Amino acid sequence: MKRRERILYLLPACILIVAFFIFPLCYLIYVSFFEWNGLGPMVYVGWENFKAVFTDPEFAIAVKNTIVWMCAALIVHIPFGLLLALMLNRKPRGWKFFRVMYFIPNVISTTAVAFLWYFIYHVDVGLLNNVLKAVGLGELAHPWLNDPGSALIANMVPFMMYVGLTMIIFMTQLATVPGELYEAAVVDGATGIQVDLKVYLPLMKPAVITNIMLNLAFCLRTFEYPFLMTGGGPAYATTNLSLYIYKEMTGANRYGRSMVAGLATVALGMAVMIFVTLLQRERRRSREK
Image (cartoon, rainbow, N blue to C red; front, side):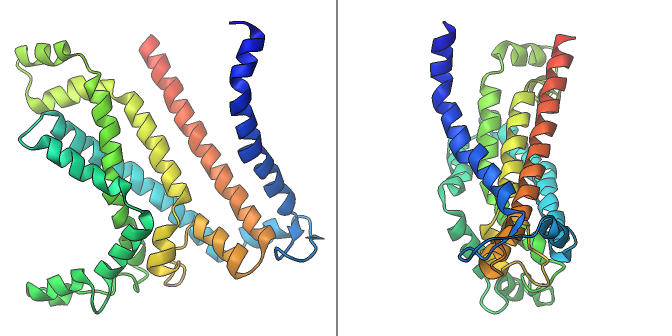
């Protein structure tokens, strides 16, 4: 393929990247140095927006909560999706039905899911508290969304409904594993768990990397759950970076500060991408050895 042809093939993607990432990022950096309410003239304030945001206690809480979301994805969501994939890969009775059922939540709007779980957690009419009372465990009834100690965890629970996509990616990777490897392991007397640990898991690193990237990206842009279920409260206990940006922009009309928070989110996302890239590079090196 000639050089000119390669450039023509890459040109549409380059135009999209410049139009929808590079240009908005440059504008983000530009506005972050101004005080602006979105309508009137912009007033240059230098680094004042950065100082105000980085010394804001609510911003620190938002960063911490976003990192907690990302850790939950790595520690709970991805391993759970892997476990489901390994279980369904054995093709038990009804495995196709369960595969579909686990994936269905991924086609439901996150807004609808957030409202659903809001009413499940509701103090008075919520399903969870009423079920606890009905089975004689009324002492466990709790204002799940109104308590700073439980609100963040309650916000993250609906995220587990989307484990189906993670599971499907793992199952796709499992489908590429040669059947001869499984048969050889069985002939050698390996149990089902040993096959999973010694045969399947070492060959699933590409799917692990993909799921890490997708889940961390989802956690970075999560907005519906804290916004609709708790509004970022109580006492900022569920505020994350996406919601902090929204509050600064539309609630306080401080566009400059919201742009600074946006830059922090971009920086965190780039750190995640570097982390994933290093994992992929390490995988290639280990494979070459």
